[in-house]
Length: 86
Image (cartoon, rainbow, N blue to C red; front, side, top):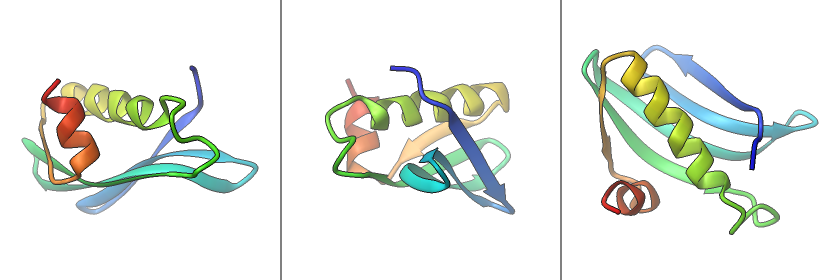
């Protein structure tokens, strides 16, 4: 599945999202503890998209972004934590 994922970041808070016609249907919320550490706080996926890999796509984009910025990723979010330990 290939969907346009967007990064929204302000200060040390942010999220990756999938939007359709201006409505956010999925997002993965994070905070930046410092330049080397990002913590995933929460993942939300609209019921119409659940089970279609959208959460995993958000996580993949976040991990790519973190790697490019030289950051380690930790997860408080149960979904992300589960995916990271697979």
